[in-house]
Image (cartoon, rainbow, N blue to C red; front, side, top):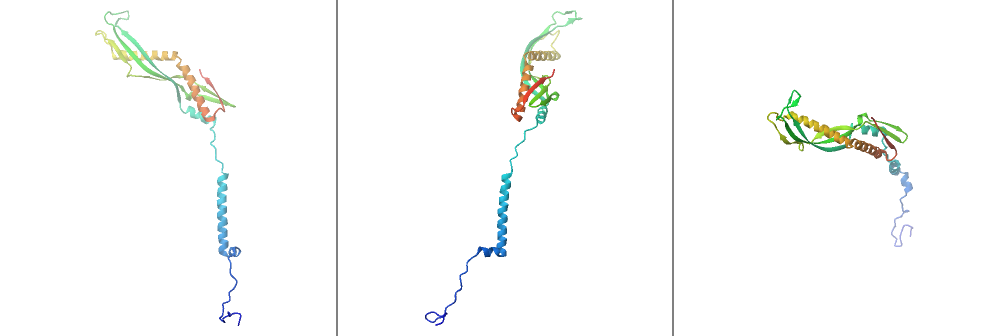
Length: 226
């Protein structure tokens, strides 16, 4: 019986050694080399991207320069810092005169008038200047002024009128008396301290603008021009 025959005398196939997968052999092939290069490139790309993202520092917004903040302030042109509503009620009388020597009897007329208005006081920032020395900012401002005096015509008007056929009340008489009431109202409001209030509020508003930009870094001083 030959080595290729089984016990019954039938020929048998010769079986060689079993083949196994080898990474070393695979990596030596052109396809394996290509796959290896692709994987290595992909890994390096991902690692590089992550490193780049992590290495980027978040840019902190830089605090504006003092001059920039000041330019923003003066760009407002005017800073309204105080307002007050006033009410003037007065009587106007008039009579014809004889060559400005004496009043002609029975020619007098009169009317009661109420004038209501709102005065606003502001600071003209076009004339403002500033200087900086170390941590101290000095702001020079012009004196406050009356920026507007707006009548409330819904509340203003003639309350009582005593007309005279010999000397009737004319529209120009009422207009002239309105102007007189307005002047009187402005004087009363000014004597009441509205300009001091405007200075205080202007200093507070401007200081708050600098504090909003720089915190407590600077000391703000004010110099009021005469």
